Length: 311
Image (tube, rainbow, N blue to C red; front, side, top):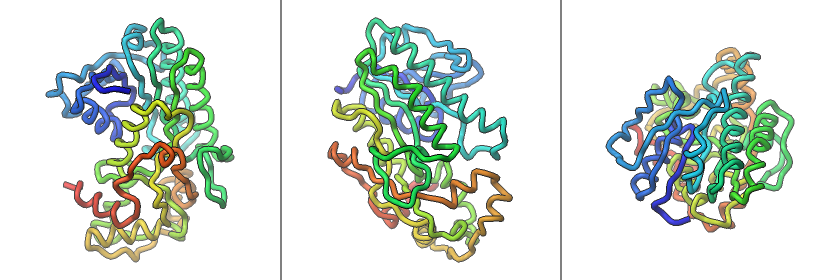
């Protein structure tokens, strides 16, 4: 896909979305950020004339059709934070509903368009695979966890977009490493205070990707017409939680020997702790086949990049 395109983005105010919008604007694309009526739409991007805000209401299935009719691509990053709150029955419903509502609304508009967009990039997660004791790639089956079922239904909601010829890619994202937000932000605070350490046993595999590589990979998928179906957005350098923690602690010149027992972690964050103390090795098979060049492929590179972006 050539540059100077019209790109519609849902979920543009989050960690990934903010950086993606900036990168698209810098290369000359016109970006429409979909925001809810109550959203202020501010994210330090106001000086980019190519960035425009338009209102939608995915919970009510409301989106002006002309927004999608004029789009060359649609990118869906919308959904309630996985680790933002303790998981109770209501919040788990919100995790699922927010994703299905947003994806269904966008998919319907794509199918109803007289000029469907060339590409639809819809977020998913490596949680799709659950926690099998073997390496997985894009051809692997879904797991049997709560997040597995969320991801499976999330992807199914986007599937009808392909019926009108739109290229559909599912972005199965791993642990995004950035000091600015996401899961890593909570891990970094105790580390920087010198009281951090492995979570649970520390032996669980974490399939991670730096925010820089994640945004670059999304642009690669957006522009490469060969990219469709599920794509694992992870570095080839999966590592144990203990290795990740040690690399970050070393980069910050801090110790990392204060282990957080699994029961204590569950007491603090609830059911989501099972996702933190479990893991799986995820291979980025499709990104490799698309000749994507990672900048950060091992934990030491990742840790040094995180420190360079912190403050």
